[in-house]
Image 1 (cartoon, rainbow, N blue to C red):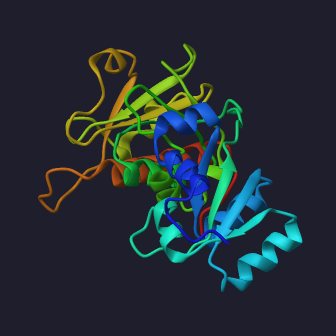
Image 2: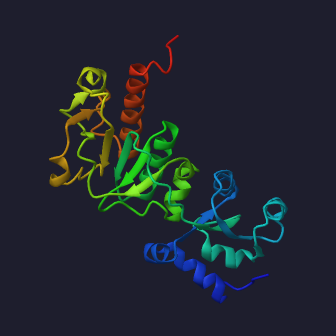
Length: 254
């Protein structure tokens, strides 16, 4: 059992909270039983689990799966966990390299971990691929993983500089874009769709704006200036999924 937060092994794992160390090692940290279960359900490569000695459920799971388990004190767990009052477990995950399959793609260009994770969760809900761009927070950061609630393990993801030339590119804008109700006739269903979601305050860069084929807006009647990136992205992504599904006759309305 590891007792001290200064233990060399704990110190090494704590460095995985930094993007550079995640990139160099190809590993990240998962916190909590839900994310651990999601990773295992998707055949993710869980290299090690660290848990409190009284965590019998995690101990049984690791025994069933043949995963190395290390018992740690609350003090040691607190150094590698991302929450203020961690209960564990914390797992070491080999970052998956699942490549996109050429479907519709949510291109995330946000730096706030909560928004990024929520958008990844949104993409997973509607069967979209995920792309990240310049300035995007590391999608495998522990905070982003926690906000994604397992969505990371149900999407294909890659970092790109620009969409493929044949894609139809859409982007969200707080006002003056095409209202969602009027999008249908303007969409080309023969092309892959890329929806760019940028920062609420800055939007997307001028260079990426030049690539946009269609700007769209979520109409609001309550006087709010704008939605945050995750909320706007989720609403637009759902509307696009609905229009794509209607065009393909993949579901019927009641």
